[in-house]
Length: 362
Image (cartoon, rainbow, N blue to C red; front, side, top):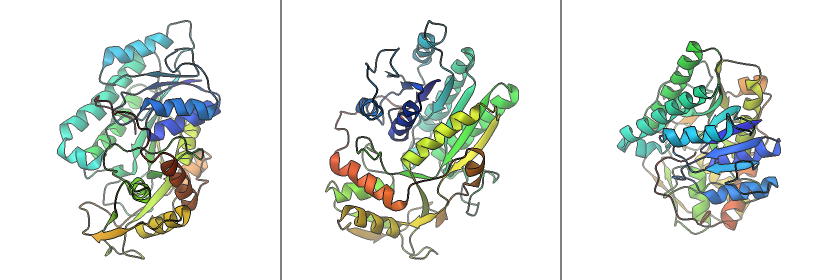
């Protein structure tokens, strides 16, 4: 199958491309490199044993630097594959979005325009080309703050910031599209906390600027890029007073997308699945696990709670276990070992100058 992956050069996207290639699929990536780098795709080729130019449309992995807001450029990608002598694009995995929660609060219009308008343009161009199978990168943020864990797909959705609302709104867009045209099939994958890196150490999380999430901040402290970690609050109603979260290895997450692509063949309409371990770990547990994996101490300071942080959030993944035949295989220790291998071998990430374009992959 030929699969278009938007945001495929990003953290989750690049790991998913590896698994798609390993499964024998042909992958077409579009990404504007705002929060990602082309070097990641070259390393994906290396890991998957794929040769050929990233810019040859006949390669097993082909890359187009395209922003979803640029409709003519997106239409040109489809034209290069659909309606030509080449095999057509048959399905889409949609990662591309702006994703920093804090930044979304200060730049709501940019987030809504980029994430929602870009998704609408993608759907319109897909429909023009008869492509109506899609796997969407959603988020546990759609559960808001009123639902109590474990979080189940049937719970009502809401959000506490523009990034989260953009995911809620895009899920609604897909429901309405599927209602209007039953030929569409959309799987909404609600991620919990993706962490870790490929076991090869060749691809991993390379955040732009200050890391927004716990583990990449920990790894940057361990490698000497940052002096210490801030732990936001130790007075929550949890076992050690720090927040509990559901951490999932990025390779397990990538394999969930492979299972979702397979599930599309059953024509499920629109349906949501949690991708999480179902096992929460505290901030201090993660620090301790990483110290064991890396053999280094992580200096940290307890500071005031961060507004909007929930004490506990974790998935009920039983629907994905049952219907996708998917469950996590990697432990927190595996996560930390792989994250440290990536960061220690690539202390400054991919070391390629950032693009000034606006949209990137998650």
